[in-house]
Length: 256
Ligand SMILES: NC(=O)c1ccc[n+]([C@@H]2O[C@H](COP(=O)([O-])OP(=O)(O)OC[C@H]3O[C@@H](n4cnc5c(N)ncnc54)[C@H](OP(=O)(O)O)[C@@H]3O)[C@@H](O)[C@H]2O)c1
Image 1 (cartoon, rainbow, N blue to C red):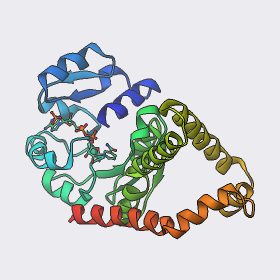
Image 2 (cartoon, rainbow, N blue to C red):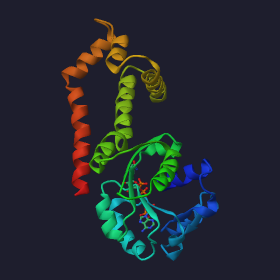
Image 3 (cartoon, rainbow, N blue to C red):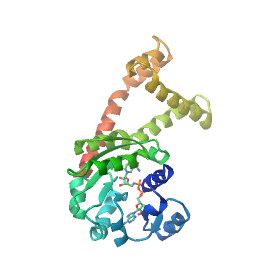
Image 4 (cartoon, rainbow, N blue to C red):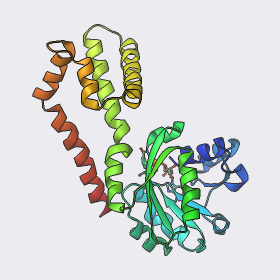
């Protein structure tokens, strides 16, 4: 995810390579990253970091505690910290780093293609000009929405952070049905992927809501209705809502 951010910043000329310092702890990956054009690559946290305006935390949440001990001594008070770590509240980051200016963001994996969506929120008192700069950087990975209430980051996690996996899951079982009806996997995948893409664009362009879009495909007594009735009988609607709420609940548990 950190590399997705770095690549997007470079791709859209928001920063120059010399302005981006990538801290990569694996020596092997350090060497391969140094061949690329995403930034200056170093192997350890050092005082060099204090010269940068923004410090992005893109390690797994369980690695944050050890990273925080390394970072604590090298930050300067004018810097802003942007965390994309799931489940670590601003307050905990501030305490661990002894640093007030923390922005917390929740991106998703389509950020790798510049098609992500990120919800972000911030500690109080960060200058609006600094927040705009961060928003510009995030927008290089897709779209962004500023969230006033940090608690809603858990809902962002459940909807869009985890969302791509729900979509892959649905696609997987549509492809499975395609195979059961006699298609090979790649043909079934081709039908399902293009259907999802087209339907996405209709949601964006048709002047009707989701219920009407469903009605426009599902004629009375027809094939779509047969599928939808089966989904309803199996309480698929309830399962989807419960699943997303379970993700939100888990995000809250992790935050605590
Ligand atoms: N993937 C998603 O869908 C998604 C969505 C939203 C938010 N996020 C958040 O984004 C963060 C990164 O996720 P990811 O999926 O990109 O994880 P990842 O692929 O494991 O990337 C984290 C990287 O940080 C490195 N690292 C760990 N400790 C370090 C240290 N002290 N100094 C320098 N580098 C260090 C890891 O190296 P090693 O592998 O050698 O430990 C790894 O290369 C997580 O906090 C996650 O919650 C992810």
